[in-house]
Amino acid sequence: MFETVLTIALIMMSISLLVCFIRIIIGPTTSDRIVALDTFGIILIGFIGVIMIIQNTLAYTEVILVISILAFIGTVAMSKFIERGVIIDRD
Image 1: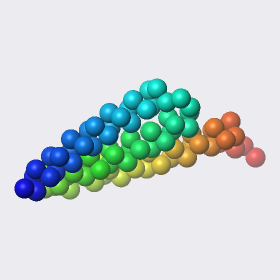
Image 2 (image 1 turned 180 degrees about the horizontal axis):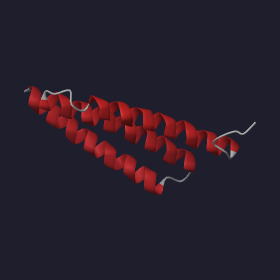
Image 3 (image 1 turned 90 degrees about the vertical axis):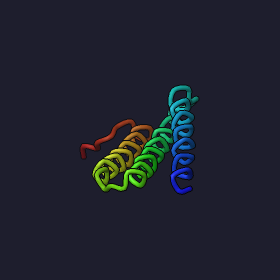
């Protein structure tokens, strides 16, 4: 029963990844694309977490950590670029 729930969760996350990818491609504004990329990263972290539960392993914990750090830094950098036009301030 638990495996069925995990399989359904993977299917739902796959559909969510597809919808986020479509929003990244045809998003009307850059802000929508940034939010979709951040959501894509969060769903990908959950997807890998469910795969870790299914495989009963901790092998992908570093992958989850790297993806979360990259998603956060990418979102902050793109938001700062939209707001100010530069990413690194040289004061």
